[in-house]
Image 1 (cartoon, helix red, strand yellow):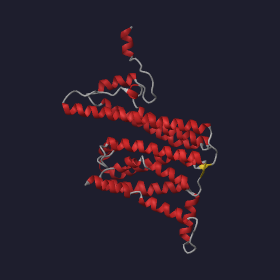
Image 2 (cartoon, helix red, strand yellow):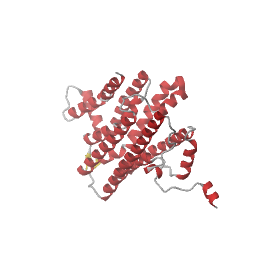
Image 3 (cartoon, helix red, strand yellow):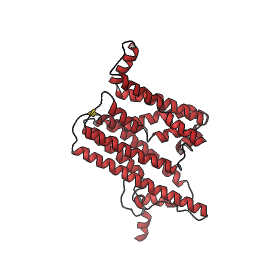
Image 4 (cartoon, one colour):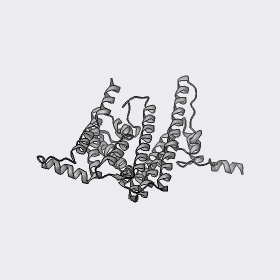
Length: 323
């Protein structure tokens, strides 16, 4: 019953923004002389695509998702919509009255954004055993304990307002793509190659991690020792290949923004990379706190690249012994 309720919430929750935007698109070219204030609103929405996107995000996600999180005592919705918002934004930027773009570039970017979102959404539900809202991100759970009775208001800033900065920021190249009619060129091909590489690397990284977790769950059920660490496949060359793939995707989009003369759009990807670097530290601290895998993971840290896949290195202690 809880799963069905959360499915219903997930499908209904974006309706306020969608309804308003579709109404705006329907009426902006045919304003009614009887509604001067409404016509002024339509004109403002036509002239300020970025501001409108931020306002809709603030009202529909920051405020509404926050209220739902307080009622449910869980902030699961933002995890699901992390993969949905970029798709909504790319269609928003492409359909806005001020939009102008090279048709090929626009179609390719929209298609790849869908591919990226489907991959990440599939990984989310696979990890959650196809349950909707069964749990929230472990970092939010940890912060709930950290902030205690203040979490109800801290969560608005830590979970939702911060996500607006990240999501609107990393999607800025999608806005840039639909702000220029510059013809497709070699840099577009390079950017798309980077984006596709990122999607593929992230997919295989996440799939290998999922299978590793599944194998350990089976071993746990059998009552036999678990494999302490994943160091096969892409994980042999990088401690976080899935993170690396995600970064390639977003920085590939940055190349697109730069190519159409909107180099400033790199700021979102930079903020996201800095945030992911901090998340990487949190994840690795969590790993070494687990006694069953602490020694193996410390050795893994000494021999394996953090993000960028690279060849294994030899621990300093092992070199000394060999000499």
